[in-house]
Length: 188
Image (cartoon, rainbow, N blue to C red; front, side, top):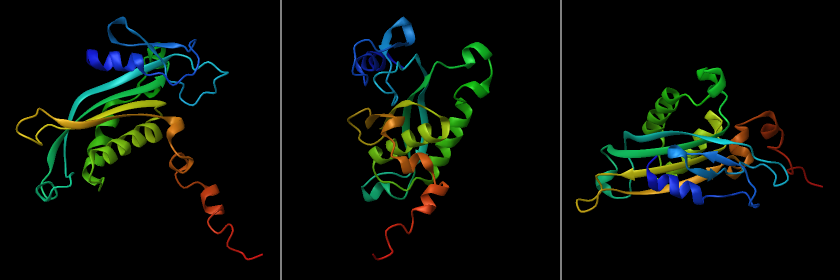
């Protein structure tokens, strides 16, 4: 994360009360920890940030006809918030976000996403990190570095929390989903 990310994260606060717990950020800066769907009457605890900077992948994305047939580079910066990472004490990869697994999942997503806008792709990345990797909060910055000759990059940055994800996205086809498929179809 660069200095701008750290300052931006410091200004991000989902918790309604000023006494929300704080997480540590690079360079010793203190930042508000997102509440990650925790009720206001319960403390959110420490939020640690795992990050991946300047991930470059190739994908087909865009609305211009010139973008729809040839893969182009996209750059991603990810901040992945998790409650106090147990790996700090256990030194076990199973107790944290596995960077290699995230990287592999991102490459797979870039090959198969089927969306046209960076905004939709950023949302898909956020869902992936929350649903598949257990993130409680994410910041996804996506950019097309080669879009125009006169700018360095164009892109989007989104922040999502686990509580932002619809229940259907979290459930992923559980038995309750099938039980409700025909609900309400029987006439009175």
